[in-house]
Picture 1 (cartoon, rainbow over the protein chains, first blue to last red):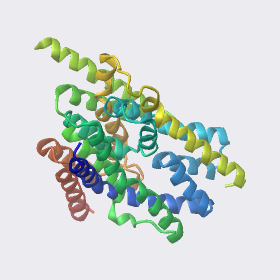
Picture 2: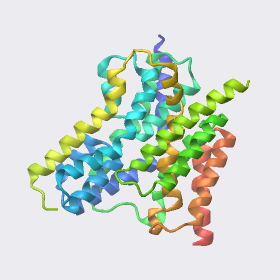
Picture 3: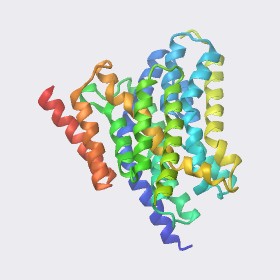
Picture 4: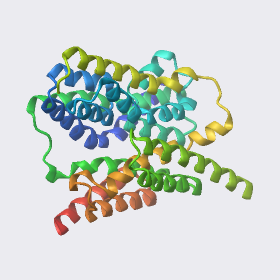
Length: 235
Length: 109
């Protein structure tokens, strides 16, 4: 394995992840602000961002804690928000499963929406990538994203101020995720899966514990697989 | 917030461990073992099945507008999707989405 191909895979991952700072920076700042305002001290706010490193679940937990919800409810709800990551873990396993356990553990710790989506898109588009190249690529993608989550949480907690709403950075999440999804809509099966996903997510928006996302995701995966089978039979 | 320091740390550490176990689950347990083709066929659709479900409510009921329909945000989402599909280029799609959002917020806002 020439070192140059690993270096280039690492920096490609880094470059592909960099635009997602648009999401990470404002959300980490906001978590620092919201956590502090809810009554957490600086170490507790940082404890969340370093030990949990999952934005949506962190916001959910802090909101419930501020409402003095029972500890068990806080934990169950926040972990339910993160259950989709089991699907991420499963879908990266065919690409990264052969890596040493400690590397898989490290990737698991850093497996956020952005690093997952960037990694999966690349591995699927380039099946010829070797395992060391895949690892270099995903660690490259982790490098700008995850440390920035810690740093900007700290800045938010210390400064007590996020980015003003006029900048409309709330919409960075939909834009960056859609930008990743759109090129992945390669076949009718992918389009059908995405269509089912959107429809069910909207219909099931009222389901508690983020259940709507899980149900929509699973149903969409089944539809994608079935449409793929149907297309194969037709040809 | 009325929880004690110990309760707060219990929540943080338990969430940290739980979240890690969710993320590690398949990567850790399955590892190198081959998964059956029908499982792999489903897993191929994970990104297009999960990410749209996360995003759809944010587009239709944006938090920034208190959940009411917002034309600039819907047009920005459409532009991102359209340009991303057409060019297969993530950066071009983000640029189109951000450009549309700011232009529409300026024109309509």
